Image (cartoon, rainbow, N blue to C red):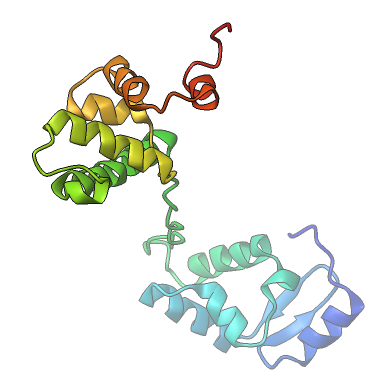
Length: 190
């Protein structure tokens, strides 16, 4: 027996339903035809709660535990114990991108961006006969200045040189300006 009591309004509403024989504050009795309808839905593998909803019942008012109890009773009354119990379909899991996946995605984007820049040295304002390493350094710097989401050290590792070599390139190509020097070496004493 369900602990939840029906309200006076719910009792009045359910007693008007043609599928209900009698409804009291603690019990509800359904017609034989409705019980057979639900059993047919069980045999077909359909959701029995949908049959209740389609026939004017509120799942919220009846309660899932009361519906499960009624269905269990009907299973035994109508010899449906052998039927498999219907399991609700699992909700599809939403993939959440991890930090390492996001970092890898951003790195792949940055690599393709840099490769396009290296393929066209004029986009970097460099002559066509510029050494490959210099082109790579310039492409990384341009990507950094364009604020692409990536890690410079990862790009350096991808192109096969240490970050210190890239930093040396930056220092070498930097204009001799105190403000820019402070950006490259913020902890240097003057």
